[in-house]
Figure 1 (cartoon, rainbow, N blue to C red):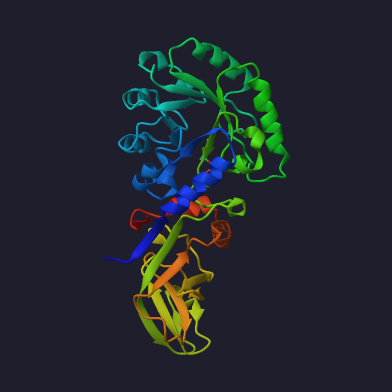
Figure 2 (cartoon, helix red, strand yellow):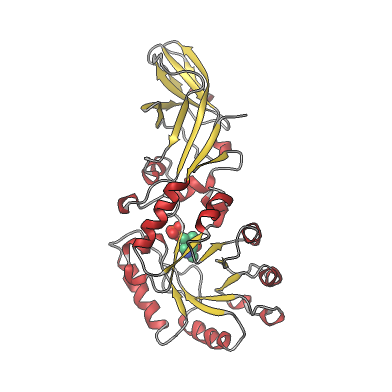
Length: 347
Ligand SMILES: *Cc1c(COP(=O)(O)O)cnc(C)c1O
């Protein structure tokens, strides 16, 4: 079996959940879209299930997979993508967002009395959600229908940036539009959990902070370690090149280690070198990443052997800093890791 794995530390997950809970008195919705930010559902849901109020996903397939693992509310964050979807929403007892009028057309045809409706208002992100007037019209319309409950929601565009004025302006707009509305309210994601306590309202929707992709400065820990064992060590001479297009040339005699992971596993494409960790020391990758391999200059270090682990990122790694080397963000680093990579769990 190929020794390439995303190892997941479930203790760090529990730690992150307790950090999150220490920051708010609101209940927590765990956002688990995109195959749980790439980390896979089962073991993590087992831990979250007794500690969160609900979950959020995007697609019906995600919701069906999750429904097999939990009885808690599951929210479709974009609501239905076609009106027929309400059939599944009803059968699977899913909560759903309404963000556009076309999603209301056939809503009366379906049994949705055990479902929570989340009415989304646009407060300035200008991505999804009703305008103030549409929102009030729809709220009054929906109030008289038979849903388990209505939650009023919106989303902040810049919550990770404590200095961005847009956040306060969105919070003020949300307050103004929902003034006098007695329904539950939800505005905050992970960034807002830490940076904007006044945005917490009733339900805080956290994703990336649970999984340690961001917010280490608030005590959050990375919960994943991406690693692969060395499958070959090759001696090469000064002047020889390594890999596709002969991009990298050895300035002196050295050794090249190869590990079995590449962009086919969802690792970001790179041609510039970056540092990986072998037995606690840092070494540079050489040449371009391949679909299934990465090559590393280990110099003349005799202690490194075939079978040693190479850590691409670990529990101490700041994923935001690492992602910047690939012109990416930590969310993408995590969600891109493909199903080909084994997911193993540290209890
Ligand atoms: C993805 C998502 C979240 C979670 O965001 P994080 O930054 O990962 O905490 C919350 N709300 C909505 C609407 C989202 O799409």
